[in-house]
Image (cartoon, rainbow, N blue to C red):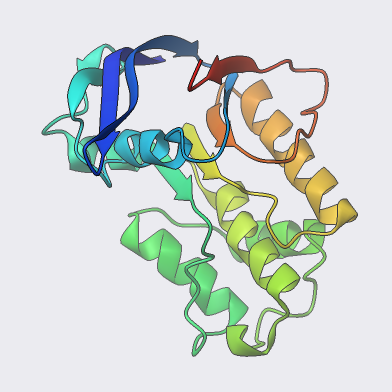
Length: 206
């Protein structure tokens, strides 16, 4: 199982952000997409997720182009962007159940309880999302990762609005995901170690 960028290129507003990007990521590994602001880190992640068209080159998943394979590919993918994408009118439990339902997966009450406890949200299952702090909302969003069977995690600034303990929890979660054969593509202004698993680094704008 591999993720491959082949001669990948992107422009924005008539300006070339990057071109001829080649990279291969294997299972159990994570890619740190680095570079200054405005070089196209988020644009690259959006292309990986099918949220933006591939301008030039290609992205291969399991040795096949992701073009035209959105539904199949998305079952293997979980994306977390700057926004938490929670429904404020739903409880914490309902938000988790809703995410699983639309992705065609399911989780047990026991696993949900374990994950919420792991992220410091024990006892908040029935609390409406609108009454959570920004840090707590971020932890709910991250709880969805732990409950997801997706092999490929794409994380755009995942440490936003998290305190030190939350950052460490997420780093441990990513490490556990990798140890079980998962993969991750991450961009972040914070350089956070993921256990002793060194990242593969893709530096844009060089």
